[in-house]
Image 1 (cartoon, rainbow, N blue to C red):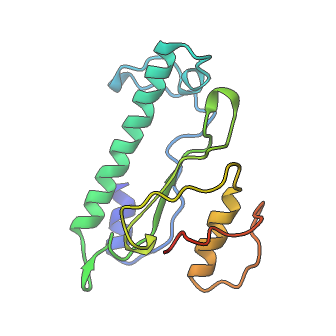
Image 2 (cartoon, helix red, strand yellow):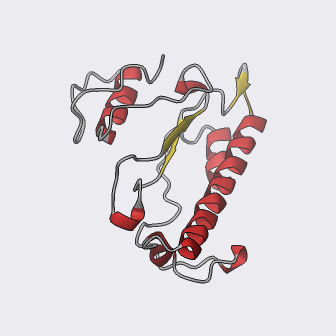
Length: 159
């Protein structure tokens, strides 16, 4: 995250893709008290202890993301901050990893490019994530009519 913040600050890039950990990760997190593999605790089988460990891992990842956002917020950029002039999407690969369910897929959009702030956009069940990517592409000038598995676009995403 620190390298990404520096790249934004230096205007080396304004686009990035960053994966914290593969869904199939065998990584453990002893620094936060999770000694079982991430993939194993994500397939929790409704075991309360494994669910708690999975929550710890996800909370840890979100804490790192929050620090990154604070860094971007602290970096001046024109008439605002780097965060003010960015659209950053953070999401999970699955809604419920225990059953490999992608719906509902948790996604958060932050930064000035995310439209008017502090909203919760709820979409119909089983909305393809391609609808989100299509809305974003169209917002930034692309004339794409479909993207991946899209069956439309999220019309009120930038409202």
